[in-house]
Image 1 (spheres, each protein chain N blue to C red):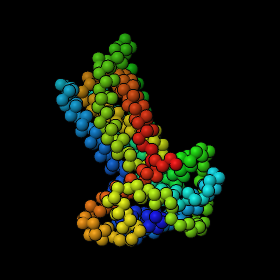
Image 2: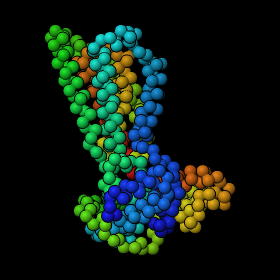
Image 3: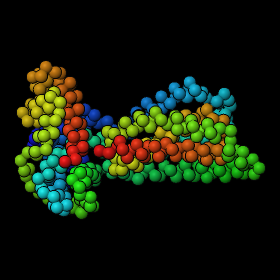
Image 4: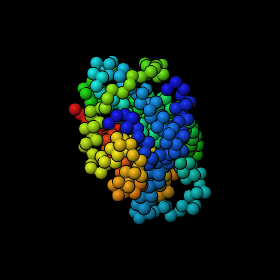
Length: 182
Length: 211
């Protein structure tokens, strides 16, 4: 995340349909988010176990809300605003209401982030809460690494129908995160 | 599910991509305005002397006022729908203020002081207070639905901006029905009629636009 121009360029390429650029952007953002969430949790005195959940919830939000980025503006402030929003939201759900500010750490955007610590437990539970068809499609693409076309062939659906259902599944996942008050 | 695995699903989901926010908001405005235009056509209709009215400076200035309010509200609504609000839209309020001040001055000079009050009260004040919220209803609903896909820094302010935009759409439609063209009337009653719409938008936004 050192070169802000680079991120905006990746997002622009992604908007034009470049999947590889989008994947690279999401992975870069994920590792940055890991550092931000980790620090935010530490500042709030919460265990780091929730870290990957915050990363995934924020990535989902960023993906579903990507149209709200104004191409004439740099990407980083937009990313930071979404990350702050989701971090505050997560902590509030767990009863932490003090002020959390990630802007203090904006100079450390380029800092190397720790590696992902296993799979997030919540994410697996939330996947299980999806309707059968949606869950099988997300599992097929995410866990088995199949293409939308392959999943469609296996389930007797067109590729387009798979993508529509996948989009619904991602929105349902984002809602499940948001409503999680445990 | 590992984050890297989630990324695979995000990359595979291409729907809704590359649809600028401005188009989403604009589409909602058009859809809502269409419903309100039907109500307008069925229940109200344009004023009978519309063609003649276009030749008067008062009517033309009224249309200019509502259109510039519409443009400013559109900019405000799109800005408020983003996680990072850019204050550029505020500049579009300035011309409205200048226009309003100039029109007030001209009207106060043009009219004898004795008729100021009757121009201000007009003959349609109550009509205006009812019709603008009525015409704003469909645009407000359409805008709130559209903004659920957005990521507003403040859901309450985004809702209020949606209310302001819906009221501006409604005012533009209503302006073609109302006989009261005096800037004294327009600058008093149109903003008053917009207030309940803005408040309703703020309340609804607070509840519906969280993300």
